[in-house]
Length: 211
Ligand SMILES: Cc1cc2nc3c(=O)[nH]c(=O)nc-3n(C[C@H](O)[C@H](O)[C@H](O)COP(=O)(O)O)c2cc1C
Image 1 (cartoon, rainbow, N blue to C red):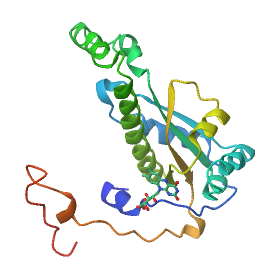
Image 2 (image 1 turned 135 degrees about the vertical axis):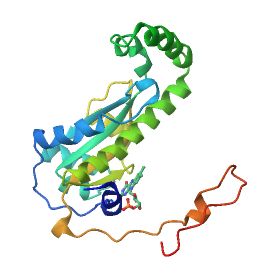
Image 3 (image 1 turned 90 degrees about the horizontal axis):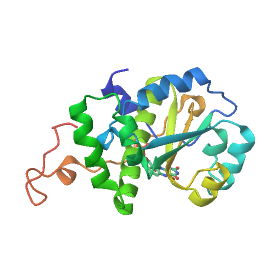
């Protein structure tokens, strides 16, 4: 599926065919694409907890304001960001050239050490990019998805035994839309409202005629 179609056909799905399984091989196909996502200094802050067990999905639904898709989907993926990803710099750059290693390892420590706010921002940035990759990778391999932040992060973290260095960024449900029914595309603001040229006070980009 080319990207134009992929972007047009991805929707946030809330009504899934219940009882579908997603296999390890299918998850591998998805996550091998997701791991290609960009991250600052290539720190790859993301971690994922995949829940397929029906009883556990039922519990997650209870912690997600009862949202039905959490129980009906094939898998709930809790996308997390590591707050201390910078501490792995030396091992991440172990196989890089000496030039890169000597440049980046001290730079990463200098940028992040003791910077709790920045560590948190980076965990969320990388996690959010990975979540988007996850939704596109799912669509490209035949699965629908839905991003979610409507859940009790503290209680979900506790249920899924998240260590303290993992920040829950978003849930993404994976499954197949009920009867192949896709939700209608919701309103999108026009380019003339959202894209400014040269400065935030500059002229806006016009929409392509007929778009
Ligand atoms: C960070 C984030 C959190 C969201 N949380 C929820 C949620 O808890 N429940 C839900 O049904 N949809 C949730 N959504 C889906 C949005 O409602 C949806 O992306 C938006 O309405 C646009 O629709 P589309 O994704 O189908 O294009 C969330 C989306 C994002 C990006």
